[in-house]
Every structure is written in C-alpha cells, then in structure tokens.
Image 1 (tube, rainbow over the protein chains, first blue to last red):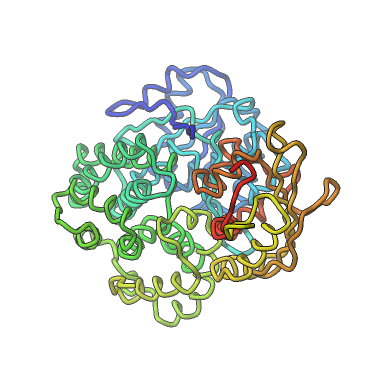
Image 2 (cartoon, helix red, strand yellow):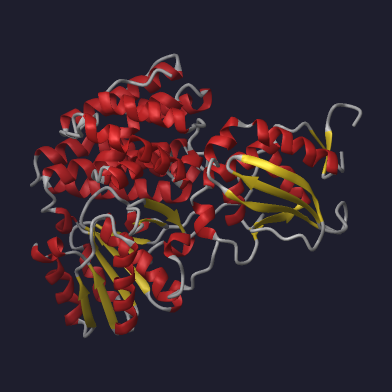
Length: 390
Length: 141
C-alpha cells in the first residue's frame, strides 16, 4: 500500500539563518513569544528581513500550549497583514501556533478542534511557512503535526494535516544558545520520545526508521553534553539535528502511547510537554514490550546504544531503564512524585488524565492495545516511579 | 453458511457483527459516551459489487443498539465508505482505518463532524477491530 514521506527543505548549521536572504515575497508575519523577543532573537530575524525590504509584522503573543483563541488571534493578524510568508521563531508552542493559524488563515470558518488529516486546507494559496526552532525537541519545524488546547476544557489535542508541513526549516545553533538547562533536558526527552515512538508506531516505515535510529544515537550522545555545558555549541547543534530527525520520523509514522499520556499530563496537571512524554516513555516501553514484534523493535534501538541480549523483551526493559538513567543524568524527573506532583493533586486529576488520554488520537498508534483501566494503572505506576510489569 | 463463516456483505454478517461489537469490552470502554449512528458503505466496483451496499449502525454509549442492512436513502451522522477490495484489506488489517482515509482508500461523508470523530479515534479503531472478530467469507471467495 502506497504511503508518502513529507518533509520541508532543511537548512542547518552555523549561519543557516542567512537563508532568509533568499526568500521572495512582500509581507512577512513573524510569530513568536515574549521571551524570545526579550532575548533579542527576534531582532536578528527582523534585521535580515528588513535588509531585504520586507514589510514585517511581529506578533509575540504565542503562549505555551496555545489555546484555540490565541491561534485565532494570530490568524487574524496574518489576515489583516495579508502575509505571504509566515515566520515562526520559537519552540513547539510557537510553531504550532503558527501552523494552526496558517490553517485558519486559509480556512477562516474552520473549527480548529475539527482539524484533521483528511481535508484540503489550501494553506499555500495564502502563504508559505518558515520555521526557526529555538528549542531542540519538538521537531515541529518539519512536521505535519500541531497540538492545541481547547479554551473551555483546557484539553490538549494533537492532530495532523499533510499540508501543515512547513516549507522551510532553519536550524541555526545561534537560536538555541540561550536555552536553559531544564528546557534543554525536557525538550531533548521530547525528541527521544518522538524517535522511539516513531520506530514502534503502527505506521512505521523504512524512511522514518532511518531517521529514528540516527536520532536515538545522537540524543544519547549529545543530550547529556548539551545539558551539562550550556555553552557547548557543538552539542547544541547536534541536538538540533537529532530533534529534527526525530520530527521527520514521527511526522510520517506518528507518535503513540507516551504522547497520549503526556498530552493529558499537560492538559490536567499543566506539566511541560517534553518532561511529560519523556517521563511516560520508559513506562510505555515496559507496557508494550510484551508484544513480541514490538520488543524486537525496542531491542534494535537498544543495540544502537550498546544494550544487547538474547531475549528482546529483556533488552527492551533494559532500554527503558537506560532511558531513566539518561533522565536522571540530565535532571529530568522519572516519576510524577519526582516532578513534585502531590498525591492529592494526582488523585483529583486521575480520572480526567485517563479520560483525555483515551481521547488522544496517538493512542491508536500504540503497538499494544490499551483501555481506560490500563491507562489508569500506568499513571499510578508513573506517580510512584514503579516499573510496569503488567 | 456451511463453514461457520458469515458472508460479507450480508444480513447475517451484520447480525454477527452487532453481536461481536456488543461483546467487545474494548469498544465499550473507548466509546462509553459516544452518541451517534454510522453507515458503512461498500461502493460499487462494477464487478463484484454492482450497487452500493450499506450497513447502518446505531451506536450509543459503548453499545450497538441496532445494526442492519441499509437502503440508499438511509442516512446517519457519519458515513465511512470505500470499495469492496479495500474493505477486504481493512478486515485483514492491511489498511489502517485512519491511514486509509489519508490514502484515499476510504472516505468520510461530506459534512461529518470531524471534531467529534477526532475525539473518538480509539473507538473508531475498535469498531474496525470488531470486524476482524467476525468469521468472514467474502463474496468472491
């Protein structure tokens, strides 16, 4: 059965930002957030665009885990400005805001919560999208995925549409030089989770597998260095590439259970996305590795970091443990308790956590089927930091 | 129905499917608050299927309240349609129900509430999983 592999043009390495000099058009709408603006990263982009006589509008109101209403505001800005290029400068939330707003720019009457993989949006009749990530994890600069939050319920929902793959991704290490330790760690865990889930998802394919294998190797090698020494620009550049490879992989084969659990943690407990999915990853490996084929896939990934053995399930469990060791090394919590979630708050939110995880589209990609009772048990194990043995 | 298999598509198949679906704990769990009906449509291919064949499913809170062959004028909140050969591949798990839509192997009815569907992708998957539990003999076998 035929399938497709969608990725944008990628320009990477030192001074990759100069690629902006080659853009053609009149009106550039820059989507970013207040923090990025304060760091002075916006100025660098604006300077290049100004030198090339672009009309520029800067919208720096993107929020973490963007709500539908926030996306609508960005789309309104694009429409009023008649943007023919959208530049997203920021982390996953900024880029997802830009992508979702791009969809609304083309389809103003669309219900964003109904954004789905099947409908034609016609986004390129309105503008092109350039993404410049300032974190190394989301991969949103190369994906067809967006994660948005409902205003009323706060539920995060993830969806894909093939048209939402950006036209150009610029990976310039300059833009991740100021990323603090904790965000470096959490976004790096996001990248690892993308890679591992892409490799075991029910939509896996040879192209995404290739990206995944390189990404896993790079994350284990470069993430600890990138966290330990925030001035190590080599490590930061390598993590940018690793995250992008993982993004290319999951965009074309999808994420799975760890993301369903993580999205729900973000919705209900407002935990950081990368921290949440990274924390969930080893538990989901332990849950899914009882499936024989899936255990083999995990074992293949484990071999990349030097973990080998005769029984794939045993190797998979060692791989899960190696991920926990990595998280401890980079000071990313391995349990909800360690993330300072109180028992009371956890208990209060548990039913909602389960409900939202069950509603998350990524759950259908899990290599081992789940139900609401199993989801609940996994969350309880995650709270205490107990490995999964069911 | 000599070999304990149910001919697809047929009235006996949909009756068995209703039974299987109502026994599915996975579907019940994933669709516990779903309210809405579905039409599964097998599109004509000019060879095996001369005219559209349609199944109507009334789905309510994790159960199938009724399932039957439907006529051309029977409508439902959601329609999932594709040619016979693709239904066979779907039952054989060679097409994924959601990927199948992206691959244009299946289509949803115009105006279907996609926001609602996107919140129940697991339930949709379990609907398809239930088809694989019906011992099926295809028309052209």
